[in-house]
Length: 255
Length: 240
Image 1 (tube, rainbow over the protein chains, first blue to last red):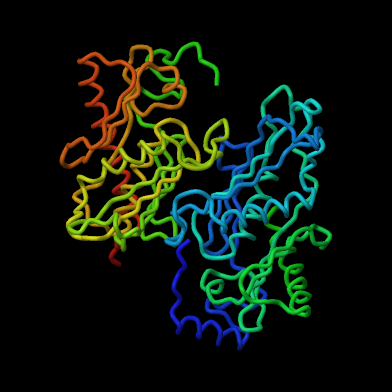
Image 2 (cartoon, rainbow over the protein chains, first blue to last red; image 1 turned 90 degrees about the vertical axis):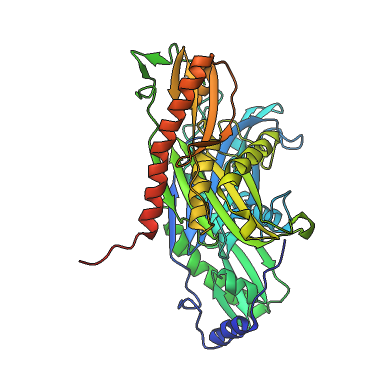
């Protein structure tokens, strides 16, 4: 992926603002951008959701299809998360096979969904060792203005909550089994200051980011640190507090 | 999807349309922030985004042409856009559609204005119901204009097919799958020139000529909706 060049004046400006607890778009450090969640717009999918957080725009479709179980889990359904950083979303995204950024995005979302055990995969067996339901979560990034992981995670969760069972005799459950609503929050560190939901320009100047995925009871089910900088122990604790506050707000959007 | 008993009942189609009637069409210009130009199109149950970047420097540089801009198109289907999940990425079908889409736009552009540069057109099919390439072209056309790329005219596109012996405009998936013919067409409306023409199935000579007429009439209506989408975004209404 081609790196985007950031003007030094812009970098200095964002850093100087952060030092005064301010941000270029006028938000408070602990404030996420305006969010909207729309579900069920793709009728070819079993579930779908479009999430906009500021100008970041992600669409997720869920497909539930029959597949073969893994040999070590003969009675468990399969979860597959893939992400495409569509070249339409940013001048730095290029067509071609998935690169590190889209693989990381898919894997972090996968971890949040899987480790929260929000889908009861053990109920998705059809015939032990032979046939199970596979849940495909496909993430389409349409417009990139930062914080893709948290937006994709929110869209994936909204799409899962919107998922209708496949029209197939082999499906025996009353509904698609979702029992938890994990939410991811990204905290960026700029010159020692922590801020929630970084925009693209903030990501371009940040030292590091930490994405925390929280369950409804406030416990953690996944984390991912990114960027070349570091976090101190106090900063990680502070990031968790920020994430907890914000996850509660974002979860309200899931209805 | 099971084959319906009949595709035409009393001269009407399964969705109640007359043979020469388009599906409901919605076009919005400028829907994405990052791209230089963008558009969203709903053509029946098709849902499509198009985005345009450029003219910009060409990478890799050896693909650039010293005397003109290069147009690149990429048609892509989301994995969840079809009934059976599609594996992500380009397959032979999308590579071909990307190519004929580029060919459909070349005649309306002025590539000589931007030597050594590239204009990228990205088409993303979010939901498919036959005619995705035509919906993609209709979206890309508005996205190119929204990006401020100089054009001789917009390009409008629709398919004509034949089901149970009747020529029909703007086929749905059932009509495409169980009909006998599918012919996507793209035209430059003001010049009345055809820039994309593909066909599979069967037409007699007389049917072919009527089908082209139908395509022109359909494209003319699409053209109006495309223009309106651009007007809705750019028209300056004077205060009284």
